[in-house]
Length: 386
Image (cartoon, rainbow, N blue to C red; front, side, top):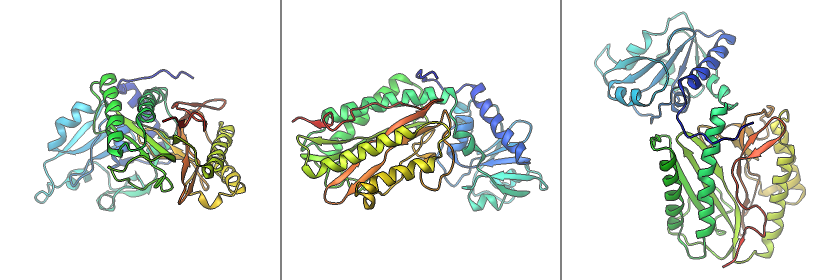
């Protein structure tokens, strides 16, 4: 499997292939139309990124013929400048509008009232109530996003290089007393600079970067937002979080590390986390049930005495977002397949001591896996001399 980095926008052929996959699933489910409102899914099929607001954007996919994009007049030029696929446009002037000119008046004209209409499970109730026909909830687009194309893998390879650079700078600059804000600025500036150099026309509605460190006083709480003026501390565990959406492709890399020395109490949980991660990697191959990976990792951590310190799953999918299906999680009883992209990040979180978690962006291959992100991994490598 080629791991060549790709920096270009998707071709019309790439987007047409994605649409064809959607229509194949529509045919299997007997659907006449499929409706997408989720901006992530619309981006996936069209290359157009936008924010949801009171003026709705709705993609109408008939089982045959050209898809129709319902958009406000204000966005027509923006959409045409970014969309890479063949579309017919349904333009409404504004919202709210006078009777007969609202978005739903135009929308309803393009769906037969006796049709079977597939919709996303996340479709807002206000749009669902204005949708003609028999509504069938089916997350078709999320389904086809699970398996990456060679193009998507190439884009993820490139995005991984962006965060690899950011993380290398983070470890170099992180020292006791350095402020969170200073780290964030230096790391994100470096990643943004690389993105602009590599992809001069990157869409910054589908691009963002994060580079931060949770010092030991808060690293036991991985979703706590740190004070931007919080100083880094001696010892550890510190937990780095470097992630990016690079012109539409999400990746992450995270490490537990120490500044100057390793507290004695931190050595065993680091070792258990490290071994749990190794266990997860040993299990990764096409055909393994993803819930089984999580169960075995949890069992190992629990056997080592840290079962009460597990607060999240072993991993999640990455693609055009930084968090999506598939999931290495109890209750997700689906097989891993070649060309899925996931994170591997079993964690241990101990209040009063800190958090222990490494994370990488990982491609599932025909016979195992390939790590797309790279950074030091061992305790010795991650104990930074002052």
